[in-house]
Length: 153
Image (cartoon, rainbow, N blue to C red; front, top):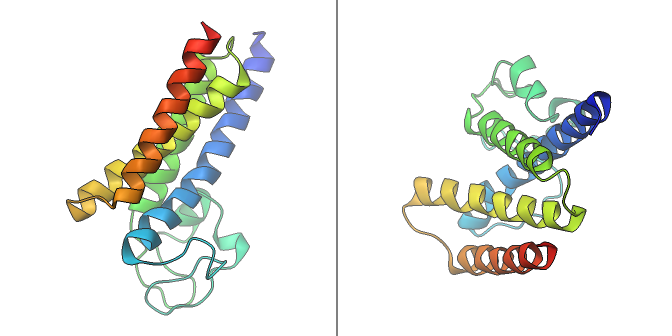
């Protein structure tokens, strides 16, 4: 890949990864507590339960700009949020750059597998146990990723 094209791919992968990381935080917070990832449809402060406006919900940037506090009640927002977003962004960027000559399908499968790994690892660290649905979804994604990898070789 040419220099500028590589930077563009890296930038797109980073932004996509940070955005997916934001969604992974929703999954990590809500699903183990029996919540839904679609209801409520917007992010909210766990303390005051106010809806977080879109401009305060930009991955990584908003947490830094708000200094890790809720805009409304000033309650601390866990550092887990920007960490998950950053780790996901870096993992997506590394995957895109390492597999840049492979198929987009393989890259997408690897992104799904990495996303599952981040969720599983975070929930396991927090709860010391995993819901079976997490493990089944992650293993299924791994199997699809493996089949895609073998098909590309």
